[in-house]
Image 1 (cartoon, helix red, strand yellow):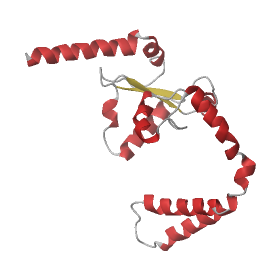
Image 2: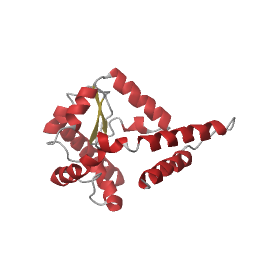
Image 3: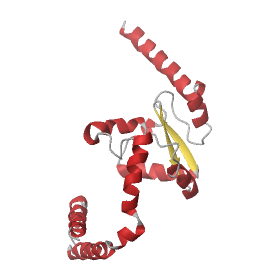
Length: 186
């Protein structure tokens, strides 16, 4: 009985894999993008195992081998790597294609529907409100504080001497907080 259920499950997954990858419109379009061949059902998911350094090397290899655009499949979800700056500019400046991936749904319980997780008209209206904040002239007044804190961070790292700093997160967090507090005091 268990064998029949497992075979039925594998058959359903193979049919779903075929439909998503080759029969559906999105799958056919995504498969036009160059990328490494994957296994049925799991795609290239096995390449995700390993240390972060190994994963980074795989991403760099993929983007070099399939420059300027590459795709991999993780089960039924495609991941597209875009490397050329002109392509990135075209995509990021688009007001039409600003819907978030399904992966952003994981963040909704923590962040709600803020700028990071919202999409469409809600994202566009909130982005319009924030855009003037990052204007070059406004950021000019913070440059001196950021330079000073960068120099303080460099001095702190040099003062560590021969000791190896393995975890830089607390180190960067402290100096980032100092810069934010300096900016807030203006």
